[in-house]
Image 1 (tube, rainbow, N blue to C red):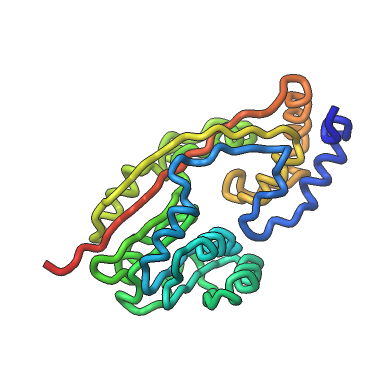
Image 2 (tube, one colour; image 1 turned 90 degrees about the vertical axis):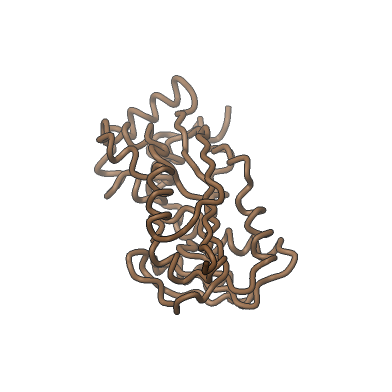
Length: 263
């Protein structure tokens, strides 16, 4: 019997509520939650793209972990690499991680215009942006430049969302659909090079993992607190104990867009 299985509901919930949430390092979940990875291997593919870029921008970098990995594995690094992030704890974390690599981290809300000149970058990247600011991406890309990203897709982890919030409106479930994003990107003047989607199995093996997930990915159940959802958490804990892992499915799509050169 695992350590998690011998611990009480109260102990597990307290642990999930105490784990720091800064950055996008998900190593704490090892052994207590799993998520299948997309077949395209975004971080490794990003390393290849960075190796061919002169000026790169990573928007909504989180704690900078994905960019740091990609730069570590790139054949060469761009002459200029900049990252933006809007959440202050992540700005500090990303700065500490990326500054030794010569990457400037700029504090900028995801709702604000990108604080850069027109056509400043030949590569713009992002992993799981809250939203893709297509007009701004098109503005800061040089003609012939590329936007290369992995986005969260529609109804991602909605088994978790709807367990706590109940059935969600269909329009909200489809808000991140890749076809919608394609139309928005093309309206902004970009051309679609590649767009691939996958749905991937997730498993939560204890209630601590659920609590930490909802504290870390705050848009899943807005305003989540242990106190507000204690009865639902207890019921889910009992379900996991009786039936095994709580299964959900994440949704991801690979996005590659190009700003066409002048005709």
